[in-house]
Amino acid sequence: MQENKKNLIYASIIITLIATLGIIWFFLIQAISPTTNQISNATTPQSTTSASYSAAKTITEYATIESGEFTSTNSDENAINVSGNITANLSNITVTKTGDSDGGDSTSFYGTNSAIIAKDGATLSITNANITTNATGANGVFSYGGSATTNNSSSDGTTVNISDSTIETTKDNSGGIMTTGGGVMNANNLTITTAGTSSAAIRSDRGGGTVTVDEGTYKTTGKGSPAIYSTADITVKNANLIATASEGVVIEGKNSVTLENTKLTDTNNTLNGQSTTYKNIFLYQSMSGDAADGEATFTARDSNITTNQGDTFYVTNTTATINLENNQIMNNDQTGNFLRIQKDSWGKSGSNGGTVALNLTNQKASGNIVVDSISSLTMNLTNSSTFNGAINSDNQGEVNLTLDTSSSLTLTADTYLTSLNNVDSTNSNINLNGHKLFVNGVEFTK
Image 1 (tube, rainbow, N blue to C red):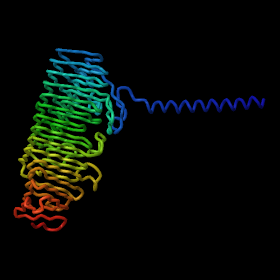
Image 2: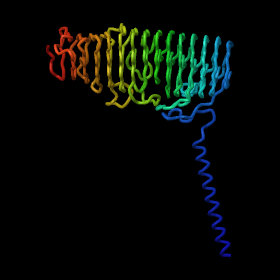
Image 3: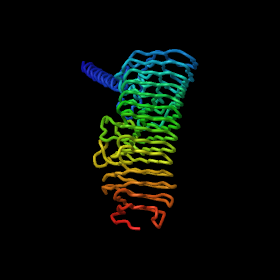
Image 4: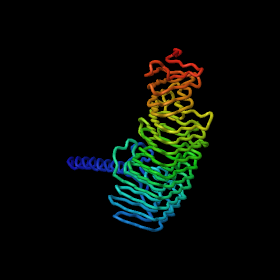
């Protein structure tokens, strides 16, 4: 009898343990399993979960299509989806995309509502296409490299080659060509126009990638829609970039834009989001998790840069390098600065200024340079460069200036430097022009 009671107690304990473990296991599975048709943790910097896709036309094996019309009218549906380790060639096609999306990050990170998307290692070539989207979250052509993470170090090799085509988007969050997750985008001789908010003509987002553009015209008319928005490495050659409401070029975090023999014309007349100033070329870190921390780099060679409202260059909450060589740079705004480095709406107050290296090579530049008290500038003039303007006139920030013997500085107002390294020991290449130059608190004299 006593033995039976012991056995019953042991059995009860075992049953209780099994039930408890089962409950724990159930809740663990619920916690780690993604919900169908949603992106898990889409707003966290290291999300690697992808989206669910549907398409009017899906291509998963080698294909050549030489003509045709392709249409998607449903929300969160691609007109054409090219997936897998395949090669597809599309030419002489018309693609139309409607059907608004409220998918948020799924459209910007993963391209779920784009007109055309390539993913999962596909190589897609598009020639002589006419692509139109009239829906929110509907990018024109999307290259998703498979890793939409902030510090992306991998890519599945997805590559889009597109040439001699037109792309028009009309609603918000609808870029022209879009690259994320380590994708590759090669564009040649495109005509892109976008009209919505947050709809850069050349657009990238979390995970970035490599974008190369040669020839063509890329125009935006919406607020918060620069000609280029870079969370990638983007090179544009022999092209025409126009932004009529937003900044011209925006670089977020540890990413880059290079312009070669390119015309950039910007009229930033509408502020968007946290922006407090008008500017053309904007380098910053938003802290959104879409771009890794690090040095933002802007390089322009043999290009024409025109600013119609605001500052030509603006840097906040990041480290940045600006390389300028043999460009024509014009600012038509009498109140606009050549360069402003200061705190703004992004980052931790007190440490959200900018640290900038400005390198001029065979470059003529003019205007004011503003550096606030938590920012710094290292400025190098080489190979017959000239700067005509005022630097740090408010005596707020740290400024270190280097001149070689072929380059010169002409002042238009009092200027304050932390250090001056002039290879010309006679200082004949410094023209005070009736103003004062102070170096580390001491007035400079020849």
